[in-house]
Length: 145
Image (cartoon, one colour):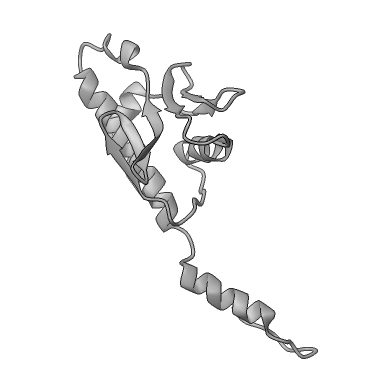
């Protein structure tokens, strides 16, 4: 489990939520935190899963995804999928460097996404399960997966 950095808990308040269109993620104080980019016509599944991940709910993501954080964007397959938002608000912070806060949050979100990918059953295990399911089963025989 990834520990939430102090800068994140100091400047972002749970629970997170998305808007009706599933474009932005807001924290409890109604600060825009993240924005889903237009990489896909169907980004709602990703944004909804991300909200759950940020709120501490276990969620699985497709295992072929690898997320990286670069220049305020979260990327997968070298494409921006999420933009870290809230720069205007963060510039009002006097006690912490706004760029450090934003970068810490972006790396934290990236780490959470990658942890969700790793938490899944490996493809090899799924293959074994699907083979077991297709095997004929005699009456009263138990199949262990």
